[in-house]
Length: 491
Image (cartoon, rainbow, N blue to C red):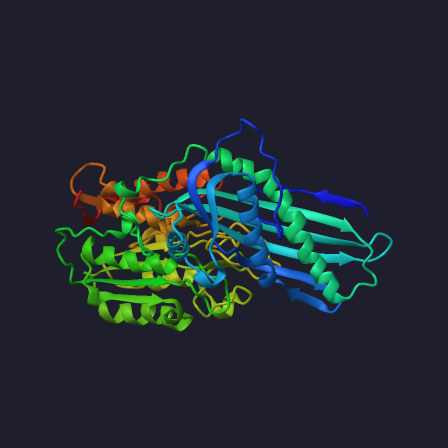
C-alpha cells in the first residue's frame, strides 16, 4: 500500500489524533511550561462533509471527540505543559463563547485553556486505475489565559492528504470510517508534529500569574472598553441614534461579537456622547430585519428629527457584494447574499436615506465589509471576493460623515481577546479618552479617526492581514466638521 502525503502550511497550528501518540522528547530540549492546561472540546465551525456514492454526508459530530482527545494525548506526550487535562464534552455548550470556554478551564483548575476549531473538512474519493481517498482540512488553535481571559497564542494550518487504496468494493459505512481514521490518526498527527514544537517555543517563557496577585475573571470578565466612563457630558435632547447589531443570522454564519459591539456602543452614546436613552433605537439579531432597518432609518428618524438634530447610526453585521454589478449591500437578519437585490439593503440607498434627513449632522459608523472575502462580509455560494467601493457621491457635499471599518477590498475582522470587532474596539477605546491628543477632555471626529486608523492597521498587520478604516468624505473635505466634539472624556 502506497501512502502519499501532501502537506500545505496555510498559517501554523496543531490538531489531534484518535489514539495516544508516542512523542520523542530530546534530552536538553525546552523545559515544560509550568502551567496546567485544559483541552476544550474541539469545535466544528465550518464545512465538514465527505462525498459518498449516495451523496454528501456531514461528519462534524464524529470529528470533534477524537480531535479533542488527540490534542490531549499529543500535548501530554510532548511535555509542553507540566499538566494536561481534558474538559468533558458535556461541561460546556455545543457552541460556547470564549468566556464559557475560559470558565470551563477554570472549573478544572487550569491556568490555560486550548481551544481547537475545525474550520473546514472535505473528503472525496476517486475510482479508476488508481483509486484514492482525498481529504482537506483547515484547523485553528488558540490558547487563552484563565486569570485574565486574554488570548495568549493562535495558529492556523491547512493540510491536504491523499491515500491510494482499493475502495471499489467498499460499503459507504466503511468509506466513512476510513475517512475518520485517516483524519484522526494521520492528518492530525502530521499537523501536530509540525506545530506542537512551535507552541512550545512561543510559550516557553510563559508563567501563569500568581494566584494571590490577580483578580480572577469570571465567565463574563470585563474588557477594558466595556468599562464605560461616566463623564460630564450634557444631555443632548435633540440627538437621535439607531444602533444595529446582527450576530445570529437566520440563514447565515454568525458575525462574531457584533451584538456586543452594538450594546457597548449604545452605552457610550448615553454616557460619553450625551444621547438620551429614550432617543436610541437598538436593533439586535431578529429585530434587525430588512423591514426593521429601513423602517427605523427611513421613518422613525424622519418623524423625530428637525433641522437642529444630530443623528448617529451604528451598524455591526454582515455586508455583501452583488457579483454582477459590484454594488455593496448591508445584510439584515433575514437577508441572503445569493439574492442581495431582494433581501439586502443597498449601501447607496442607506446613505441616501440618511442624507435625505433635514438635520444638522449625521455620523455613521460601519463595522462591516463588502468584498465577500470573509470577516464581516459574506457571499453567495461559488462567488469570489471582489473590490467594492464604499464611497457615494451623496457624502461629498452633504452633512453625512461615515467611518467604515475597512476599505472596499479588505475584510473587517474581529478581535477575539477583546470580544469586539477590531475596528469597534479601537473606536470605543478612542472615545474612552485615548484619542484625546490635545488633552482638552473632548474627542473630536478628526482625533478619533487619526487614533483608530493606525491602531487597527497595526493589529491587523500583526495577524498578516490588511485593514484600514476609511472616513467618508476624506478628512480634508470635512473642513470645520472634522473638529466637531463627539464627547467628553474622564482621562
